[in-house]
Amino acid sequence: MELDTYQKNAYLTKEKKVLVVAPPGSGKTTVMLKRLKLLLEEEKIAPRKIIVLTFSKASAVEMETRFSAKGPVKPFFGTIHGLCYRILRGQRGELNLIYGKEEFILKNKLKKQLKIEDEVVESILRGISKYKVMNFLSLPLPDLGVREELFHKAFEIYEEERIKKNLLDFDDLQIEVLKLLSEEKFLRSFQAVHSHILIDEFQDLDPVQLKIVELMSKDQSLFCVGDEDQCIYAFRGSDPRGMIDFEPMFQGKKLYLKYNYRSKENIVQYAGEVIRHNAQRNNKELLSSRKEETKILKVFPENQELMLQHMVSEIKKDAYKSYAVLYRTNQEGLRVKEYLRKEKIPFMSRDGYNFFKGFIAKDILDFIRASCQGDREAFLRIANKPFRYITKEEMRKISLGEAMEKVLLDPKKKNYTLQKHGEFLKDLSSLKGMKTARMISYIEQVLGYGEYLSSYAEKTGRDEEALLEELEEMKEVAAYYDNPLDLLAASVKEPEVKEAKVSLSTVHGVKGLEFDKVYVINAVEGFMPHSASLSNLEEERRIFYVAITRAKEELTIYSPRFIHGKERKRSRFVL
Image (cartoon, rainbow, N blue to C red; front, top):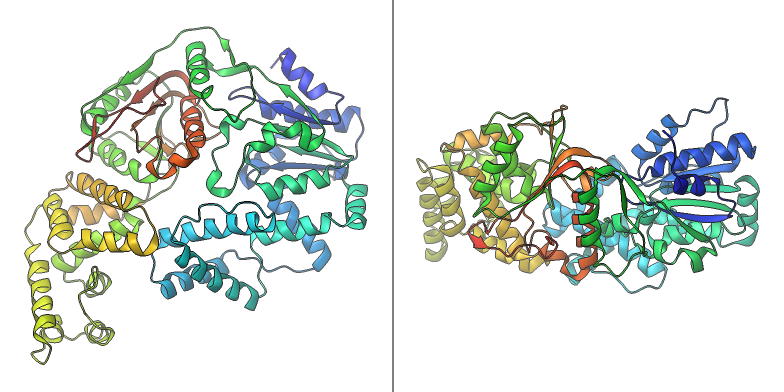
């Protein structure tokens, strides 16, 4: 492929510290590899002196695979976490990380001691990561994702376990390496070995990583490639300010790639119109090398069912080799998957997410198992959701095989408790024979599961509306299965991972990928932008921008008027 003027100027630059600002489809990886080849073959830099950093391990492997230099010694290819591990291990010897088995044990400890679900544990761990980074750098503390009291209890348990077992997490790795690099003697010894640093996806660095790069590259060669408009990992601490403030931060220069070689011209123009509303970005020109016009279809169906009907009718025309259905959150994909299965359209689930493993879906399925199959373990998991005064001793007796009625309807109990337990068993038994969708409404309203979700939101700080939306999603998917046993069977199917023409994914799951035709679904207020992220509206706009710039040939955006029975406003991003 013949490089354009901007690509050539970028990889041939004589500047010591450079940030190449690269829009979608501009060939940034090609430029990075050309720069690496130039350093090795023309400037004769020893491979061991070069560090090549990428955002993910998979990207590092891909970059190394595409690098075709011969010889026993290669540059370091890896993530910044991998580099920090290598540096710290060189100083301290064997390191024990919170990873694999240790991570599993720690998550279970948090879950059991705090009586919280997996999703809240994950939210807390993300909060701990951001808290450590911001606290170390004396920056304003971020939104912790859960109630402050719960977070600090979790942090205390987490740190106590970590210190007791002499473990490090990835943030500890980075912070310890930053401390080392802050020592002049160590920094000089590091720089004597490594003189050239190349960084891909520069926009995804968090504040500690930026500091590490700032120190490592002091008086050294630095070549970075990134795009602040594609910075969509705020939940991991990524911050686009490194892209904006590169020149004063690194005393370097910005160069710009301008041509998108992926998308037809009006897709590039539309994407530019969308993203220019962000303030936190470089002022850059977005051009398309492809001058053909294409269809950008904006569809406003009455509801999601009509949206799916329209989308499937388009896919069945089989006009292209690849399609992507993109959404903001994992939960939104469930209904799409069930609809495509019903229509017998093969698809690949790129995120590997299984909605039925979320705690709300698992609870609903346990209510069904307990009522329709007499499953004792399922019964014990939902017995106190909401709290029904069923004691641990009573749970133990039931788990050992005693009849539920005998344990719960013991006449020695107080009248109030006896009445509550009697009502619960009667209501649970009433589920038998109901159609699936009605059964879930009954679980929510009569068996009190909606009340349980409200109290859970109050306890953890989770958004109650988001929890109820997830329950609504479960109801609507259940409507595809009249018989609840069919829903149980569907829930244990593994996500589709085989290659297929149609890919389903969150926007985050397809960053860096491209498809002939892209469908962006649920482009409405509350979904895209997401209601929980309105405080970071620029990031939400970047997510939408990444979605639409995956399209090569055609783009369709759906904004249903009603979702889960509620009227929705068209997304402010749909221009």
